[in-house]
Image 1 (cartoon, helix red, strand yellow):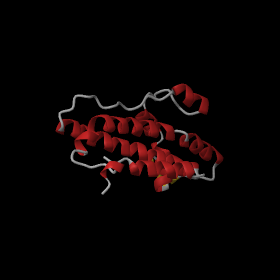
Image 2 (cartoon, one colour):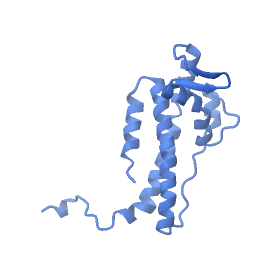
Image 3 (tube, one colour):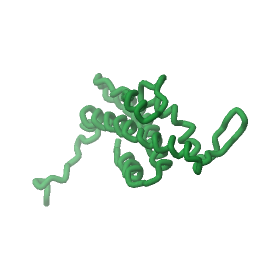
Image 4 (cartoon, helix red, strand yellow):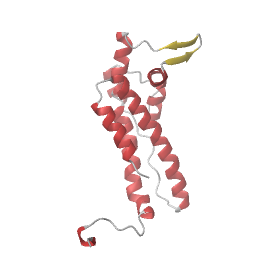
Length: 158
C-alpha cells in the first residue's frame, strides 16, 4: 500500500499558512489512516499474519489542555478527530447541520479562527497514526508484495 498520497497531504498542510486548510489536511490523513487500517486487516487475514496491527494512537491530554482544547473525553486520536468533525465539516462543506437547521461557519470570527488554529495543531496525531501503519506495513506486509521485484541497485545495472 503506497503511502505517497499521505506524504503529499502532509506537505500541503505544512506549507499552508491557513489553519483552516491545515485542519482539513489533518482530518483527510486521519480518515485515510482508517481506510489503510481496514486494508491491512484484510491483508493480515490473506497472508495469515499474527502480528497485531497498531492501535489508534493515544493523545496527550495535558498537551491539549495547555492549548486550550477540550479533552475530558478524549483518549485516542479517533476521539480527537471526532470532536473536531464540526470544524472539519464547516471548512470542507461551508454548512454545518444543526438542530436549528443548516448554518455556515463564519470564519471571520476571531473565536472561530482561534479554534481552527488550535485544531490545526492536531496534525501531529494524524502523522502518528499513519506512521505507525507505515511501520507495520514495512515490517509485516511489504515482503509479501515485493516478491519477485528487482530493486534498482547498482549491481542490477545493465
